[in-house]
Every structure is written in C-alpha cells, then in structure tokens.
Amino acid sequence: MEELKLNYYFNDIENFRFKEVFDNCTYPWEALNNINEYIKKFMNNKEMKINKATEIGEFCSITGIYFIDEGTKIHSNVTIQGPVLIGKNVEIQSGALIRPGTIIGDNSSVGHSSEVKHAILGNKSKVASMAFVGDSILGKSARIGSGTILANRRFDQRNITIKMDGEKIDTGLDFFGSIIGDNTRLGANVSSLPGAFIGPYTWILPGLQIRGFIPAEKRLFPKTEYTITDNEKVELK
Image (cartoon, rainbow, N blue to C red; front, top):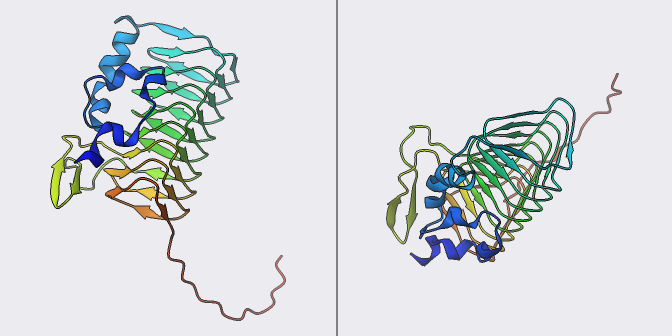
C-alpha cells in the first residue's frame, strides 16, 4: 500500500511552515484529524488573533482564532472563520470563504468566490475562482482550476473508503475530500468524488469526474463526443 502513504504524495513537507500537522502520520488523511489540535498547539492553547497581513480590503469578516502572517493580501468581501492558520505572502481574492480548520502554506492563493473548509494547502498551491476544497490536502504547487469541486461527503453519509489492490480501506472519516500530490493540476470544472487520491505531477484535464486512486505522473483526458447539425440564421435581439 505504498501508494497510499504520505510520502507518495508530498516530498517537501520539511519546508512547509506548518509541517508539524503531519507528525506521526503514515497516511495523508490522518493529518486531517490533527488539524484542530495542531492549531491549538501553534497558538499556545490561547484564543489569539494575530494578523500581520499587508493588505485587508473592505467588508472583510475575520472571526475566531486565527494567525495570518506577513505579506498576505486579503481582498474585499473575504470571510475567514477561525480557527485558521495562513502563512506568508498568501493572496485571498474577493468573495472567498475560508472555513474553520483550514491551514494555508506560504505563497499560496485562494481565488475569487472559492470556498476552503478544513483543508491543508501546501506552499505555492493555488485554488482558482469559484472552486470548493473540502476536507482535502493539496501538495506543494498543486493547482485547482476554476469551478472545480473536491466533494467531501457520500450521499449515504458513511465513512469514506478507498479501494486499492482489491482491498477496501476505511479512512474512518465521514467527511473526506481528496489528496492532491505535489505539482498536480486539475483543470477547470473537474469534480472529484470523496476519497480521491491523485499522485504528484499528474494533470487532470478540464471537465472530468474522477474517483479512487490515480497514479503519479499521468495525464487524464476527457472523452469528448458531440453532434454538429445545421443551424438557421436568427438575428438576436
């Protein structure tokens, strides 16, 4: 089961500002269980509000426990609900929603009207506009395209499982999105089912629905089929 282990997906954890969230983790989803305790430890178990942001736009709401490091720019109409940790030189664009239990590494960005919930975003990762990242982990320089959804719960609300080599493994989590390896890219309007694992340096082209395990260094193409017919000339009002 080497393909499910933490080091299959992330090879630069030592340079991640909040690397201790991965302590004692064999499998990446275990870090999701560590988030809240790690944030408390980082904040010395105090209800602290530390904001070193270089820029905060109009009509922003920042509540709860939070740490926002220097160089970070928060555009207008952003909502941040602690507890959260946000590193250096992060850009959070207008209308974004950062929900509790989110950890964002240095030099990352969250796009316009995107939502991030109880997730870990590695250094230099990017979530483009109008995307949803729930209960997921993005590796260093991972990219999530506009309109992409990392779904995080089954319809029947049971624990998320993954099938590997014919064996079904229970993650023990009923909320669990995707594991996205270092330097992996998901194009616009990709949707991933709960419990998707995507290895590093893999590209998922736009419009695909993905599930299960996808190995490292692959490129996935959609099957595009459509019909072309003649069309009358209509002058639009």
